[in-house]
Image 1 (tube, rainbow, N blue to C red):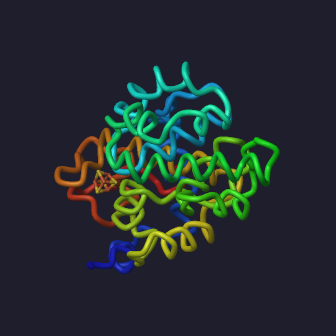
Image 2 (image 1 turned 135 degrees about the vertical axis):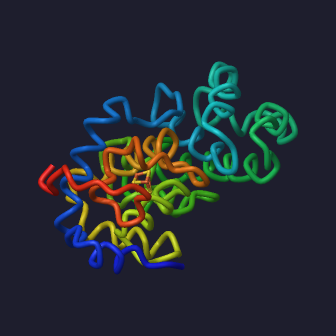
Length: 231
Ligand code: SF4
């Protein structure tokens, strides 16, 4: 992959550490509404929503959970019905067999090891069946205990385009971001990149001419010289 870290140096845009502050400021100004798009009313609903969101859109998950959460309100409810019934109830989110298995396993684990409550520590969350690091990071951040930085497809693409990382594997990208993103911003930073990725920095057609980060971005297709790096 082309390294935009080196390109940032060539264009004289400043180091990653120098650019990260203005990048966050400008994105926060641009996307004031950037927050998780999943709808939930409790920690348990949050966890289930995030587990269901694998390989599908948040809009699709919200459509399914609107009914699901009326029927299933506590961990026991997911175990009280036959497996096939839960499969049917979450069918529209795709991968319904794996997701059913993961959800039921997780509910069992919550009851056995966490008094039926959703833990907030990353190290506990990743012990739940079917809960990978990304899911755990999303849940911990939403519960106000961000212990890492969520790296999804948008975060990955934008971090690379902005020259904040040279890495490909999400875990390595996360480590690079942890070194430069202030800890207080670990929860909101992914939301900012996700919304910017959806609205402006599209995978195929980035709208560089409309982008507030153009003067800080080594992969910008437009020449912007008017905005100082300080923000
Ligand atoms: S300048 Fe272009 S490539 Fe860079 S973040 Fe903005 S839209 Fe994406």
